[in-house]
Structures are given as C-alpha cells and as structure tokens.
Image (cartoon, rainbow, N blue to C red):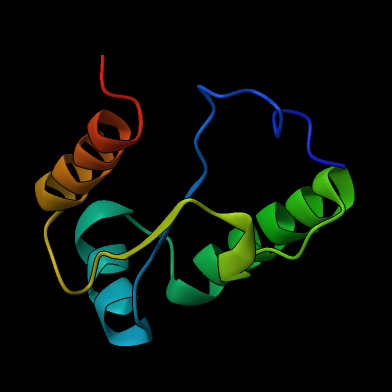
Length: 91
C-alpha cells in the first residue's frame, strides 16, 4: 500500500549517485561521515521505505523520476524535478 498513491499532486523521485561520486561527496559535504556510515543510513531508509510502502526501495516502477546526481549538479536535478511537475500538471 502506498499512502499517497491516489493523490494526483504527489510525486515520487529517487535521487542516487555512483559510489565514486558518493565517496567524494561524503568527504566534502558530510563532515566526518564515511561512505560506510552513509551506506548504513541508506539501509535504514531502505528498510523504512520497504516496510511502510510494501514496495522495493530503488525499484524504478515505484518512482515518477529517478535522477543520477553523479552525472549532473543538484541544481540541474532540481530543474528536472520542477520541469517534470510542470509538464505533468500544466496549470
């Protein structure tokens, strides 16, 4: 069961990056956290998501849009998300 699945104005995005990018970003943006610690945090998120949605974390069928941020900037990812919303729900 997905709580917001029937809501037309609910969007689901999955933002991810490859390991090399995540390792470098961990050094520059997450202070003293290692990639291993960030992986542990992601595993907690994954279990939470799987339990409360009954779906599989990272399965592309469960998201409106998946974005690989190792290939573009956070600002470009935001532009993609906003563009998607504007195209899906034109006013």
